[in-house]
Image 1: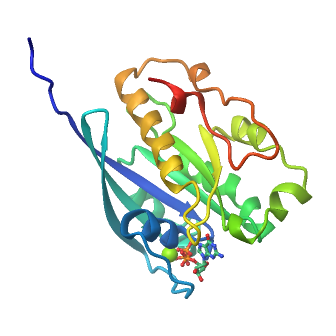
Image 2 (image 1 turned 90 degrees about the horizontal axis):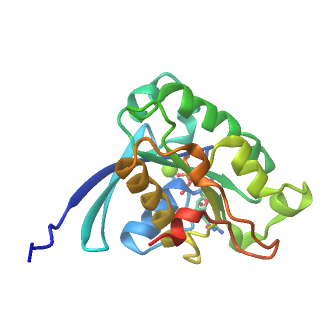
Image 3 (image 1 turned 90 degrees about the vertical axis):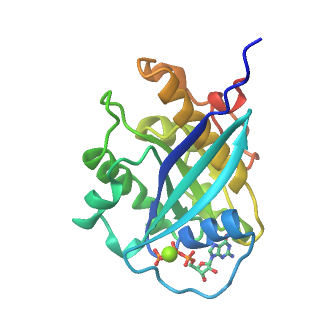
Length: 211
Ligand SMILES: Nc1nc2c(ncn2[C@@H]2O[C@H](COP(=O)(O)OP(=O)(O)OP(=O)(O)O)[C@@H](O)[C@H]2O)c(=O)[nH]1
Ligand SMILES: [Mg+2]
């Protein structure tokens, strides 16, 4: 019998979105299991490493916490280089941060693509869901449709404060990155988003239920 090969993966993941939406807090919760209510704007970029073990494999996520104040600036091209996936974050209490999501996604796709020309996997995070879900309900936004139209592989309502859906969102992103790696020629159609109920806390993606 052949031994199991323990594969190791290192993935660079970008965390982008407007000022104060909670990018640093999400990473802090995910990596260090804590939360602070105080806001200190990130300057430039910060880094964090999260090590996961997934199906016999070690996955190292190098998280690039990019300051919201970089807003589609020239430095983002440098920061985006060789990333394999991205979280785009907005704040459910501030509609303007949701409006900026399409701009962040366009900026990302304009500056970065995989070697096969596909866009990197991107997951949308509706953060601060502990504060309500006004942005999601007031505007009648159909999130699944929004994700399909804008090329997100999934979306989640998250809370860094209450630790909601952050592990799930990361798992979704990693599954998509691995799927892209293993099957570089797979068609975009494979990544359709499954329907979900209005009451559910965040959509997800077919790949998350694979294997
Ligand atoms: N209630 C609540 N507050 C949050 C949550 N996530 C972040 N915050 C607060 O929102 C503020 C901004 O959070 P940060 O994580 O610093 O935001 P950021 O996106 O990193 O901001 P920049 O570095 O300026 O781009 C802080 O006061 C956080 O405590 C959350 O899930 N719920
Ligand atoms: Mg920050």
